[in-house]
Length: 550
Image (cartoon, rainbow, N blue to C red; front, side):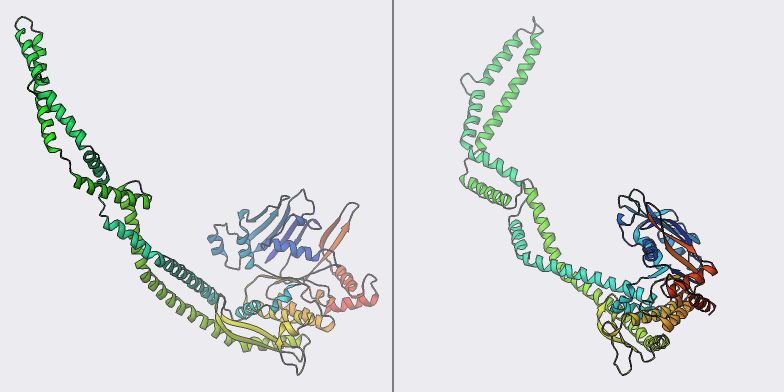
């Protein structure tokens, strides 16, 4: 339950702090005093979005802090899931800075807005003045019936499995789209792969071919050079080898009396042998090198083929072409495997569809089963709220599977005798919507463990005896959970366990909203004022005493 609320620098509020008790707390005050400002501030704790327009003093931050007793609501796992410190008395705080930055805290730990939204969804139900219009929303009507049928756990399981189904369907759709697109390109991939496959590419081949091409293209120059080498080294007249041999002999002749010539003789001997070997090898090479125009043509054709492939595939080497070939092969294998992948996903989708359908059928069964009792209880309540000739029906229609199941819910209503019920959107007035909404809140509050419900003028459009009956119903709700009710009706205000007054206090420079707890005597005065206006009469005071004593 909500134990206290502290508000700083919000709208017309400088700073207020108010404690709340169990049971029924009524908040009253003149129009414009700031009653709904309290709801606006409290909604910050439920994660609503806002901006710096809510700051009374634009140079200071706005702070709203609520203290909650959560000891009876089994929220320890929530705190574990979000790595928060659990406390039976938990502080939830929201701050809005002058720059518009919003921060949220749970027990002084910073959290994201979605965390306090989820946490406060277990703690507070705020019914604003405009929420009666929710009755026109089919999804809200469905939520009401689910709450009454206690479908929360089943609906969570259904939603989880439905989302899994949607994920599988998306994967399947994406895969089918990808497969279709790539199958259209498969012929082109195959054509490219076949070109590279038929080319019979080999690593290092390009370099060997280019070397062959250079050799075959310069056969004449090569033979001339090798012939010249052989001639210069080993011709019969004045060859290089013969001159080296003569030099070696000359050095040998002086070694006996000039020992240092021995080294020269040895070196010349080595040179002589080396030149003989070179001459022999040059002669062999000369004989090996032959002009081969057929081979040159083959090399040219192969090089043209390789260069053309490299240009076509934007490759700089044979290795690049081989990698491209491997990539194409993988693409082709992937395309051929799509059918199998699609079959597997289709089987998963069918299996998941069956699981979701089974849960949807169970939801439909529970909704249909709870429908007669729900209609009966609503009808009894709205008749007690001054609509004796009313009729109320819940229409359940089958639809395609959706995040909410396979049912469309429509509330049919008529307030008058011999008038067939029609969808609420077409027939219910403001006062009728208020009473119907209160009846729904009453019934749903019996099914939910929500600690606190806040009504912001749920009694709009009613007065007199009907207001008194609505007050009795609100009082019954407050016997099970904490109710905070903003009202303009004295008949309802008189039912309070605690009565708070919101009022404006004006100074020379500013106007501020204040709040206080009324004493018994002050309550008499406030309710008398609600009955008669500013000029409080003795009759109004007596009437106020009578309402309070009832």
